[in-house]
Length: 525
Image 1: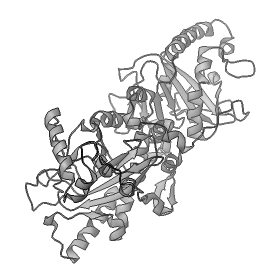
Image 2: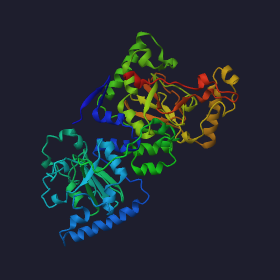
Image 3: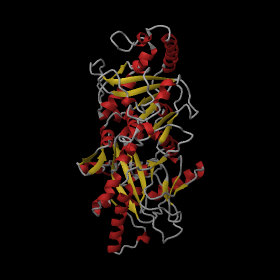
Image 4: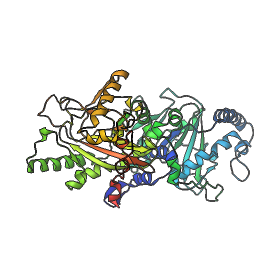
């Protein structure tokens, strides 16, 4: 059951609160996927992983051979005190520090491998989830680790599972599980998902997940290790130091990391793996908000803004925008949109630090802005810890002056007034000093042959852009059309915040260069 709690005025569920409160960023993506889907998958960050994997495969084949020959099969894996034999490769895998730290992040306690081989001879056809099996120990089964020794491409060999069943979504808590089948040919069900394990991959499975586990146990290319609570305190997890200074020294966000391929392989992004890949390569990503109240929330925000416009006879064709209307106009929904837990969790997983919104902008029509990089005005140290989130408050028409952006431009050097040769007098005296930057941006687009793309979303869709991605408002072809949208800008904790616009060739105007951003999240406390 997913319980709902009230975090001051923000309504979030228990799982979201766990993710928002967690400070172990390296495991957060896997944690979110485990909570959401009932499993997570990754390759261990271990230099000799392939060596360990190959030897564990030899052991597995030997165990299966001796199993029918002698009665000491279990003793090859388990010691007399029922502890796993850590001299074997399978034993070493089950005790990997990365797996144990992962469990501690998930369950806030250490888990221990347990001997479950005695149930394999029982009839399991009536069970659809591991947690329903009557094991020979008092503590509940907490997790199953599956080691894959084969690249699975055929859906008949894949692990079938019912999405949401680990959280009892779709009434899985009450319906007759015996009526559930995993016939992929005859059954077409949106809730039926497939896991295609890759060679050497580790899958951590929630025991409550409804899945074809009989297939998992019978399939010779999987090996399962079962874990329960470590009530005897056999393991001691190292204390993890969550001091924010440790993250301040990290010069890259996760999505900007030069080791992005290793991070993707490690499973660090969880369900947001494709988002991370797109963000790293193109400088933007899109994802959907699943909250059933999301559309009504943005409808309320748009309607209140429209009411204010009508009551004050404001001509929106003049290109008006509302900055921080949650404060200036007391429209609470605008702040709720910017602080939505699904957005905060996604940004936290992608960047590897905790985000906070510091500014909102609402546009009733197209902005007609020249393409630009936000990093000229909103930057950070380390660089890259800022992003914008563009949300459609209505279905956007292609002729309304859509958001446009230049994929890949975020990888260009960050600009400042100093880098383009401006002194403090030029910045101060110019009526529109950003025009100097626009010349550079146009030259960049032309010389590097960047091609613009237009974002034509449906109501509720959102796009996240990198701090340095060139973006703007395209030409409005039909002035009678509205283009209701909200842009929220986010910084991340543990950084210094600045405006490179005020870093000139002759000096740095510290009063304007150093930023003290507003933190909308603190308004909840």
